[in-house]
Image (cartoon, rainbow, N blue to C red; front, top):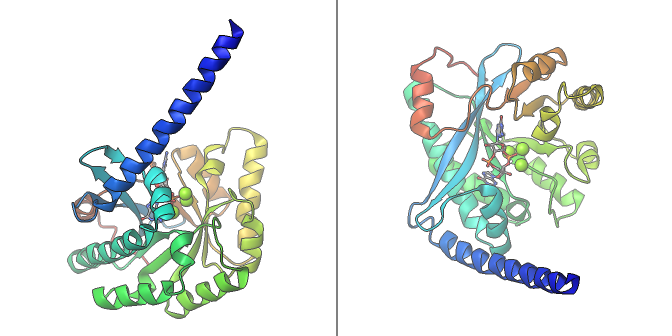
Length: 283
Ligand code: C2E
Ligand code: MG
Ligand code: MG
Ligand code: MG
């Protein structure tokens, strides 16, 4: 009896692995035509200064609405695009469209706040990476001083020296460089110590646990104060409750982003956001 169960389990496991491979292959095929078929679009999530409550800018997040698969999460298709090299094309698409969309908002509402774009390590490892960004900035006429590049510490094949060099090049163009998902990776601390970030984003997993227990609170407050001691401002991501916000305010966290303030929204909704408030100031 148990032997048979064991066999079944093995067969089941194999079948699901095969399914995964088939699904992946289909997704990759779909992704290859997603740009051409206009299935990709961008959403923007507002970020606010804690002290003044003013709008600071937006993080750009990609969405894929596939005719075949429906909505596919970026957590699923970005890694696939990284494996298949498509991330380079997608990354350029994201930047171009984010800049164009935000230029329209600037013209209509005088909004000159920051616009953050996530960049995959696979993109950043490319030698032409900074040049590509400079080219897209020039073509779209977008102010480099308004651009923030978010990088995570994962999957860098480049050496620490090369990553440092790349960050310096971005900064020399006036671009702001943020460390995303701080605290989740193996090398968060060496990254913070060795690379000159302009901003650190504390990962949602830490924010989630605020007021869950004393230990978690101490952890977040230590993270904030450690980054502050390096003279780097801190943004908390994934803030969902007033309690979390109050705690972060108390700990002098500089900026905040999360469902409590606003979900990621398409560009027409960004326009409505300005129509419905006087909050056009930013820096
Ligand atoms: P991320 O850059 O850390 O983005 C934060 C994620 O948390 C986003 O998920 C956002 O929608 C979500 N989020 C923000 N506030 C809250 C909140 O209060 N509660 C909850 N439950 N979630 C919140 P999303 O859009 O699904 O993106 C997931 C990840 O996919 C991103 O993590 C980023 O690593 C990647 N990604 C998204 N867009 C791009 C892109 O254009 N290029 C690249 N390379 N990666 C991207
Ligand atoms: Mg991000
Ligand atoms: Mg993040
Ligand atoms: Mg992330």
